[in-house]
Image 1 (tube, rainbow over the protein chains, first blue to last red):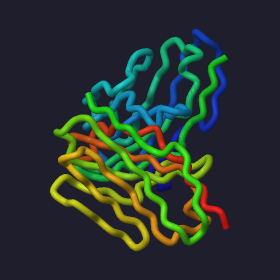
Image 2: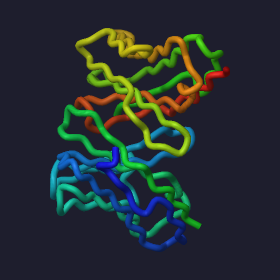
Image 3: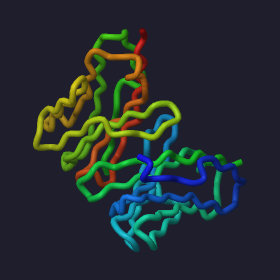
Length: 112
Length: 112
């Protein structure tokens, strides 16, 4: 589990500000994912990446941007944060498409 | 797209009793069904999964059953212990671990 980390762990920001959440994994996993967790909704996929420079939308991509220039990093950017983006964000990775997803420790984001 | 419903939302059992959590999915093309356990303030962790070519899978005190005709799958925990108290999430995917769609979660409380 220590192979996937997220930073910051807690973040408070204001509406309209840009925020970037970082995800780093040391396993050289091909696949990486971003989820948000809200009460009553479980975990919802925002974006995922099959490899460096390959990304695709999940269930709830609006308001988010991702990039993956290096295999080990998968940052998530909120270009103009809104209160509805207050949530806990989890990054995950898997070795291949058929493999278990391992989750990072999460980032709790509050948008005031 | 895929939709996963999970019941019950909360479940209280006495230590030593069994617990059953049920999920239904909408897309008959889904073929991978993992279960995740999330303790308070922690990351989700895979506890068991099942693929569409198998009807049942066991791992010590936990088991998962899959009924593809009815499009539902269930998690069974026997001889529950206080450390089983957590939130449990089911999920479904059409691509063996890629683009998981999660249920809303079940809070399991094991009373000692």
